[in-house]
Structure formats: C-alpha cells, structure tokens
Length: 288
Length: 222
Image 1 (cartoon, helix red, strand yellow):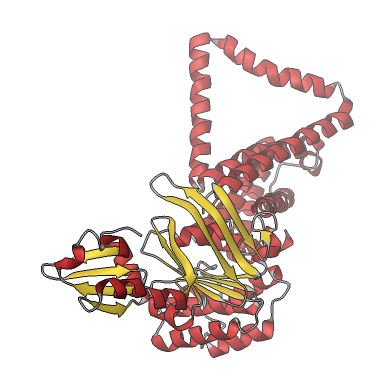
Image 2: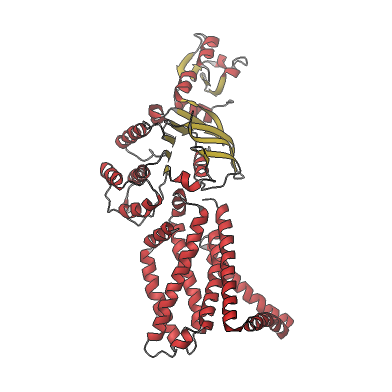
C-alpha cells in the first residue's frame, strides 16, 4: 500500500505537555479523521508536519519523503486549512491569491476564480472583513487551487453553516476519487467523520489510543449500559472506560462480540459512535 | 527568494510608501543643515535600519509568519529574503535622502562630501552595526528585540560612564586605542585597500548576523 503520510514515533516535549511516540499512516486515496479532546496534541501534530514547530524525535514522511529534507517539494503538494486562517488580513482576496500563487507551480487561476464564485466569496473584499466561515472557505479555495495532493484540515468545519459543511464533505469525497490524493482531517465534529472518513486516529494526552479503519472501529466498539454488576472485577478487563451514575453504570468496550458473549442479555449493548468513543475515553474512568 | 520579497513588498506597500516619503525627506532636510555628512550618515543609518524591522514586525503582528511557513519554502529562505529586502530598503532610502540632502534649498553640503568613500563606508558600517545587531534580536524576540537593543545600548553607555568614573580617563584612552590601532592598520593598506578591507569586514559581519538569525529562526516555534 502506498502512503500519503507516514508518522513514526513522533515526539515533542513542551514541558507541561508531551507528544509521545505518535505513529500512524494515511494511505493514498483515503480520508483520515484525527480526533481527540482539546489539548490532546492534534494541532501539534499538524504543526510538526508543516515544520511550524521542531520535533524532538521520530519521523514524518510525506509521499515517501522526509518532511524536513524535502520541505519545499513536499509543501508544494500540501493544501493546508488552519482552524484560524492567518492570511495577510488587510489584503483583498485577489491580492492574497496573487501573492500566494507564484509559490505553487500547479496554481490554477481559473479554478481559483471558479471556487470563489462557488463559495460566494467577493474577490475584492479584504480578508479581515470576512466572517469565520468565509475565511475557512477562502483557505479551502486556496488549498484546492494549487492542486494539492494532500489536504491537511485543522478544524475546518467549526464555524461553518450546515449547508457548506455538507458541501465541503462532498468536495473532500470527490477530492480523493483521484487515488493519488489524501486528506487528514482534524475535527471535534465526529459526525462529519462518520460520513466521509476511511480511517480514524484517536489522540489523547499526546498519545495515539488507536488508529484504524473507521468501519472496523464502529463495528467493534460498543457502549454497555447496566447496573452495578458491570463493575464486577472479572468484567473490568473488557471495558476501556467506565462511568458510574447513582444506579446506572455505562461502559465502553472495544470488542462488541466478546462483550455480548460475556454479558448475554444482562446489559444493554449498543453500537458506539465516534462521539461515544471520544467521550468515554476522555471522561470515563478506565484504561485504553 | 524573489517570491518572498515580492510578497513583503505587496504586503507592506502602504507602509513602505509612507516611510519612503517621510524618512528620506526628514533626513534630506536634517542632513542639508549640517556642514559634514558624518552625523547624517550615522543617524540616517539608524533610522533606515528600523524600517525593515518595523515592516517585518507587522507580519509578526498578523501572525502571518505561520502562514508564510506553510507555503513551499524553508525557514532559511525566509530569513535570507528578509536580509536582502532589508538592505535593499536601506540603500534605496539612503540614496533618496542623499539626493534630497544636495537638492534641499539652503543646504551646506556639497556633492563631493556626500559621495566620498569615507561617508559611504561610514553609512554602510552604521547600517551594518544597527541592522546586523537588530535582526537576530528581532528574529529571536520579535518587536521586543528592538527594546532589547535600545536597552543594551543604554546599559553599554552606563558601563562606559561608570568605567570612566572608576578608572578615570585611562579607560577612555583604552577604549579609543582599539579603533585607532584598527584605523592605523587599515590606513597602511592605502585608500583602495582600506576601502576593500572595510567592505570585506562589513560583508563578514552581515554574514555572521545572517547565520545567527537563520539558526535562531530554525529553532523558533510558531
């Protein structure tokens, strides 16, 4: 399998926060969702990919090349949408595009003009005057206009209206129809990932909890609801996280089939959504 | 590199036009009132070295450096382009103010003094000192680097005053002896050799400054 992005034992130490041994790989032709609670390290990973911060250890390979050794070549193949787009604020959209375009050999002016039109972005408007959603749209238009092979999106759908969110997800799905391309999508809106992601990587406290195909995750993980009997010591190993209320115990299991076999009809077992998994692993007492 | 320079010129066009109008005009007038261009050369160099720093500081303010670094470029290229643009701006401003100095009505300076090798070298040396010292501090601390520079200059002044007070005039003589002996050594090379030697030192100082800035920026977290 050919990979668009390979991250191997990546580490970064901020003193009060450490990214430890982060390892995952995104195959070409796929979308990977990067999820995790606030401060888990998602943005740090993205900053490391773009060399905005220095890594302390590990390796980042993009299209087979080291992201530092072949920085210019690799960045010309990456389209980046940051959660807070920092462009040159007082310039108009056209001027920003004119400034950015010479950096990219594959810049397509016609495509850019078409995307501005499709996104209802006024070319003569100054960037600072745009709403957050419009800024995101503009960042996306720039990323798509230089025909990037890898899109890295950091919280791109926050602040967007549902209509454009759906439109964006459709565009991302269409984007990876070209099997040489890939998308890394960091978000809190897990429902977006359930629609389009092929792989999910879950980060918590600077470590990868799991990185696997989405269908495998959604098929295997389950939420279990029952009484205090779920707290029995012999059952604890099957749960990744447990939340205890007054009379009800809710737990997250990584192996739905094994859980059903062990519990039979003594508890309610439901398929876990990505949001459930993120919630229980972030808030539940347990071990992953 | 050219892309970065064009980007910065486009990004800061309005500020550069404002600076480019008022600074040379002020220096042109100020310089024309003096009988020798030495003071104007030193003061002007300080003023012009601030222009690129202020301009680059605006980009930091917008947090646009992070965006610039997400473009297909390297940190080294960004620093190199800033040095190149900085020197271009300083030289253009200096040339404009020199012309204005000569054209200003009632001016006391003549062309020979303005274009004298000594004046040109003094200007370049002053620019090198201010810009070459400021840039690494700016890359390291942002606009606070300017404050660090100014405070360091003041501390240096205080140290010399204290030294003079404690050691007496002997301290000044020691401090003055160094440039005197350097001047004597340079003079021994003859006018052309001396100019070439000074230019070589200035280039070396700029390269050292560039090297430090590149290393500092390579380690900077954005």
